[in-house]
Amino acid sequence: MAVVERQLIQPEMVQRQEEGCDISVLEPQVLAAIEDESTQDQTFVELYDELIALKPDPSFSYEEPSELDEIKALRPPGPRRMDGTVSEQTLRDRIFGGWLGRAAGCSLGKPVEGWPRERIDEYLANTNAFPLDDYIPFSEGAISQYLKASTRGNIKFMARDDDMDYPILGLISLERSGSQLSPRDMANTWLSYMPFNMLYTAENVAYRNLVNRRWPPESASWRNPFREWIGAQIRADIFGYVAPGWPEKAAELAYQDACISHVKNGIYGEILMAAMIAASFATDDMEQIIDIGLSEIPANCRLAEAVHDTVSWCKESNDWEVVWDRIFEKYGHYHRVHTINNAALVVMGLMFGQSDYEQGIVLSVRGGWDTDCNGATVGSILGTKMGAEALPEKWIGVLSNRLMSVVRDFNDNQISDLADRTYQMAMTITNGD
Image (cartoon, rainbow, N blue to C red; front, side, top):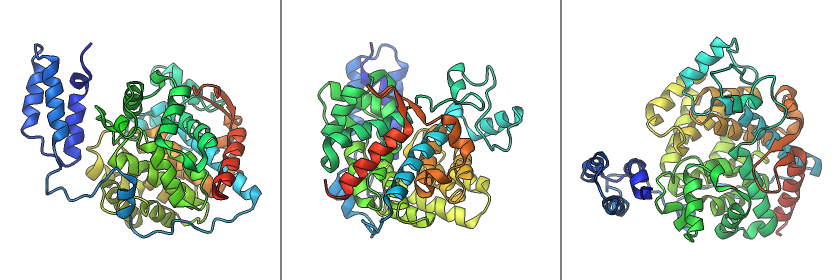
């Protein structure tokens, strides 16, 4: 088997360039080594080390630390903690809405995960489902049989998906550690409850590093070219659910999880979404929710720029496809499962669907790229903002309050039970556990 450096050096080049490094000297050497089948493994190790040693070019204008204290020092002003006082019944309903909204949005996007926007719309037109106003229909040969359980008329529950495994893993860790959750606590939960082969990209690499006793934060950075991809962003929700009206606490908890596998914008994606969910308990103004999320990440980072751009474009046009075109033009160069471009689609879905759950999840999924992740995140934020009772029955009813998972001891779950446990955890954290 080839050393990991040989397998991962090409995406590492891309990652280093996106981080502002000049790879022009090393790139031809790397490409020549790849082309020459006789290249020794040690050559790839040395080239990889040279890539890692590069520093961002002085012309790179962004400030993107990975340490929590440094992140906090670069945040814009924010409320940090809001008056999120609601009745016990309302809080329970809002948390349940987050879980249900996430599951429905994930299920909507699951059959077309990774598809570009044009392919999605063409498929919808060919199956008489355009414009989309329900789950995606199943067509033999076009959609995998494995994904049929997440298609229109075939949904009996929320089928297993890593987007839904992660809030369960987060809940397990929070129940063990409360507000004192550490990266090591979260890492131990992964190792105890999550099968290695059901983790992908950055999480798969981080798990490998953990097994080799490379603990956080090294687990996030060592030979991990996916460290700014979307994996941490999709793990954010549980930390927002348990900190209603307390975006700073949600951000701090999200950081403890994110730094296991991600750095820089990968971390910021999880912090942003967790803080937005926490804020959605205290205000129904979507632009304010987004601003509060931004107040927990560095003001001058690439992710913040993408979010600000998207909000501005949404305010300039009432046509989501015009906004999508602008997102694609500026941020379409990122990998289809990168944090930055997908976060822009999430913000687009939230801005256009701020009072319409269906519109929010449908537009975020039709946008393409990481469709199940984006549908899940938009669904979660809107579900938390609106509450379970306000979510359309056609989207949540088919799930039968049931969630399947590969998390050990949590393979078949009642979504309401998970929401109740989350509520208890929220009460514990907000009352100072």
